Every structure is written in C-alpha cells, then in structure tokens.
Amino acid sequence: MIRQTFNISLKPPSRKTFLEEECLNIYWKIKNFSYSWKNISSPDFTFSSKKWCLQLQPKDVVCKVICLSPNSENYYPRGEISFLTCDGSQEAVSDCLYLQASKDIIFGQRRSAFLPKDTLTVLCRIKVWNGKGKVSIRSVMGVKRSCFLWNLEKFSEGRYDKLLVENSDQYGEVQFSLKSVGGINSDEQFYIEISRRGGEKCNCILKVSVLDVDGKVLNYVSDEFIFEKEDREQFWRFPPIIRKNKLLACKNLLLPKDKLSLKCDFAITLGEVSDQTVVYSLYEDVIPLLKFSEDLSMHYKEESLPKDLKADLKRILDNETLCDVSLQVGSDVIQTHKNILSARSPVFKAMFTKDMKETNSKTVVIEDLDSDTVRRLLLYMYTDAIHDYQWENIMNLYFAADKYEVLSLKQKCSSFLKENLSCSNVCEALFLADLHQDADLKSVVNDFLSKYESEVFASEAWKELEKNNSSLACQTLREICANKRLD
Image (cartoon, rainbow, N blue to C red; front, side, top):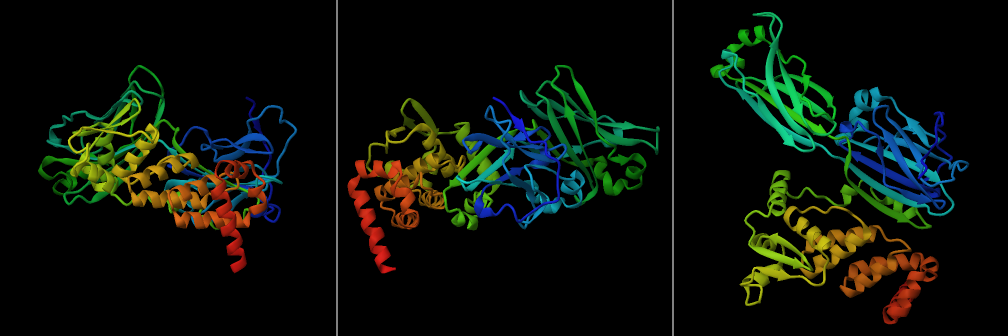
C-alpha cells in the first residue's frame, strides 16, 4: 500500500473557493489530544475511487491528507484543512491539504479555544464532483488516569515507603518514591522519583499538589516523561515539589500530626487511539447535513449516569461478579444480573417474575440476535452508553431495543438512523420502520424518499425492495403521492 503525502507549503487562506455544499466535508474530533505523542491516522474514506485518510502529527501540530491507493502520484485534489475553535470558527486555515499550526497557540495562548475538554477538531474540505456530503469521525486517545491522595505518615523520621501506582503488562510496574536533594538542612528540597520496570513505550504525565491541613492546594507542579520499552528498571526524576525550610516554617499548616499530604494526578498512555467512531452521510444534496452538529456526542448523550457508577456497573458485567442468570446466544454464554435486566427491561422483568419458563431457569436462550448485538444491548442497560456508531450495528441494536422494550435505547437508535439517511440505506430504514411499526421513523423516511425520489427509485436497493416486498414499496409510493397532493 502506497501512502502519498502532499507536502505543500502554507499559503494565505482563500476561503471563497471551497464552499461547504460543493465539498466532501470531513470533521475529525480527537479527544484527549494533549496525551497524544505519536502520529495519528483517521479511518479511511473514499472519493474519486481512491482511499484516503487524514494524518496528524501532534509534536509539530501538522495535519495533512494522505492517499492510500497505489498509482496516485499525479492526482492532486483541491481542498483546505482547518482547526476549529470551540465556537466552530475556522481560525487556522490552509487553502491546500496541508496545515501546520503554532504549537504555542494550540497548547498555550489559545488552548481553551482550540482544545475545549482537551478535544481538537479538524475540518477538511475536499472539492468533489460526486460524493458530496459529510464524514464525522470521533477518535479517543487511550489514557489510563488515576487521582489519589498520598499521605506520608511520620514524615520527620525521613523513612518513606514506596507507593505502587500501576502494575500491568502494557504499562509495567510503576512506583513513586519521595526523596530529597540539596543541603542538609534548610536548602533541602523534596521531589518524587518515578521508577518503572517492564511495559511498552509510553508517556507519563504527573501533576502534584501539596495540601494544607484544610485540604487546600498550596502549590502545583507538573511534568511528563517518556519511558522506553526496556526490561531494565528506568527512573524519572520529577521536579522539586517543596523546600524543607518552607515545610518547617509552616509545620502546623503543612505537617499536621507529622503527616505530609500530596494530591497526585497520574496519567499514562501508549499514545494510541483506543476507540474510533465514523458516520458517513453522503448523497447528492448535502444541504440537510449542514444543520447537523459536528459533535456526535451532542446527539447521543451518554452522561445520564455518574461516571463512577457507570464504571462500577460495567466492571461487574465484564468481571461477571455475583451473576445469577446467563444469556445464551448461539455458542456464546454471557453472565448477567436479573435485577439489572429487570430494572431496565419490562420484558426481562416479566421473564423473571411471572409464570414463564425463565422464572426458575438460570439461562435465557436468545435465537434472533447475534452475540455482538446482545453485548451492545447489555452495555447500554448497565451503563446507558452506546459504542461503535455504525449503521448496521445501530439497525441491529434498534431491533434488540424494540424486542426487549428498552425505550430510551430505541429512541437513540431511531434518532441516529433518521439523521444519517442516505440514498444507499433509506430502503433498509423503510423496511425496519415498517417491521417495527415505527410511524415517526417511517414519516422521516418518506420525507427523504420524496425529496430524493429520482436517485432512490433508480437505485438497486429500491429494485430489490420492489422485488422482495412489493406491498411495502406500493404502499410507500401511494403515501408519497398523497402527501404531494396535500402539499
């Protein structure tokens, strides 16, 4: 596979050339961007019969378009790349497919504008004749964070135990030690030595605060360090956090009962993407897309449960803690909890409380869903979260939500389907709406068909629908004609 890079120098932006409705508009949101230190590539997308991706180099804040198809050396698409601020403004714009921004501005002076909630948004517009529309990409950098209070008892004795903060195959064994440097008495300074043995190459970020007797932050020190992939023990000397003379001068305030309290925020990352979501909305008339939010999370809020509660519930599902019922899906057996299933689904509640065969059984057999869909259903039932927003996945999840009457999930799936209709998938949505008697979804589908009838009715998908479900096709045509007469 050949990766073609366009190394084009930056020019003053020419905004009038690339109109939104004439382009393929790619919105790429990268969450936890400040933790990235390796090059990041977006998922592939296609235009002009070639595969492409966006690549971002965090170190230099460079973004460019790369062609993944062979024999494309002489093909140079026209377009622009920009970084968006929190209000959606394009303040860093290149009128070619290569953009480099000032690191001091992105991470420093204008950090709050360009990195709201530590999320960088890239907009790439490519002038195309066919395939106009929108690709929404959401990438999440994998980061493991821990925030804890490190209490050093009997501080004046000068003997401080090591603190184990991480121990895994990926990140290795990470320990903190409090040490001192400098003079014997007043010039002495305390710092933290971080040691690591084993693990992959990773970046560590540490923020340390000294707390007073009331738990208020006195000072704040932060730094980061890259550990290499080595078997031997490696050491990172963190900057000094406080002088001994200051501790002694404020002993009652900072060393109550001879105890020093440090608040530590520790993050460790491999610098790799842990999760990516892609939504394609491609059809000839792109105008309806322009009203959609660029941020997928605005459509699909997943914060209805507190984060700690969501994490705890997911943990008991993943670890199969105290499970009392199994869901058998083909050869796959998933351990779950009757109470949670009953609380989230009236169908499961009836199974376990009424005179049904599942009431006294420890196994529920599911024959009309695949294992992946059931796991996505359970993830939502336990955590109120949906992952992997792909059209086929949401279609299957809609079916499962309707079957088990998880109405909030059904509504979210329906919203996704309505907002991502295209000429290639509208027939699938029509069949689904009819099968589940979803009048609201069917109404939106009919409106779409009425607006893009020439494209849809000439498509292979519509011909298949007429062949396999002629009654639904005829009924739909009658409804569209009736609505047009009313208009």
